[in-house]
Image 1 (cartoon, rainbow over the protein chains, first blue to last red):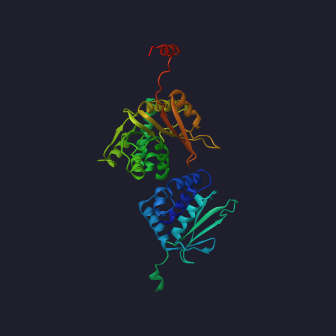
Image 2: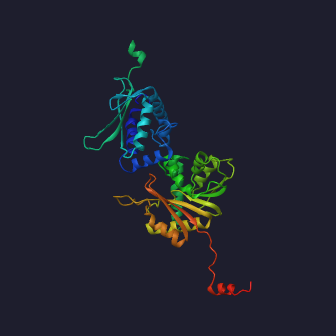
Length: 158
Length: 227
């Protein structure tokens, strides 16, 4: 994210995402949206789904950066509970959200970030308990991020 | 009632000025929740034939957006009514040149149509005492009935499970308004809930007029008729 969205807005977007998929009314709404509009199914993309859900940083530049970041996830790989997926990071997120929201007992979703460098650019999808203070299971989606002050690839080679 | 309407007008003029013609501009969190409400409300309409529609509390005309997506083939004569002149100005700018569409500033439906919808218009009571707000809602429901040839649809927020209602908002269980529509307005009512939002939708239809029951005496007279 760092290169697409100002650092200060990244936690803000994470909070929006996690609130939208939280236990209770929020998750019930997402289940209703998926049932009626198939929000996390083709032809929707993460870009169109999150735009409809109004999930984005507030500033126009950062908003556009966030949407470009979602598109960039099409070029990343993904794994699910440690096993490599055939889908891109972007498509795996859509598929996992769809499967979860359409299953008989959907889980709340926790979105997280991890460094993109090693292994390079992989979306991790797991079912686990992300909070030490809670025994509640979540569908956890962790997306790769790079530091905004990271030297450019060309610069590193020099 | 006049003061209450003035506050409502001021509130929604403020939201459209702050957020523009977007879901936030009409106090909804996002387009999807707005569309999900339209799905429920439009169940009162029969899309197999052309119809006219009053959209009360129309805002910037988001319903037209949804109709274009879901019911592009439908022939609808649309009239959007909103208490806020700023909302109507935004709606007119957005839908300029659209056929069979008009927007008017008003605090009630002033023209007959086949159907009327009101989405979210009863949710924000702005700290008015619940009894005053309910009296306002009763007036509006009576008005919606008076201007609807076939029926109308409205939605209300449901109470929380575990906390009190907010001072700014109005929440109600369905029974309160189902009873009003059946007993006071003499309409048939269908309740929709469990579609994902903490709310319910009422599909309210006028009952078809039935012939006056014949009197026993006249029936006897008919039997005695030489024919």
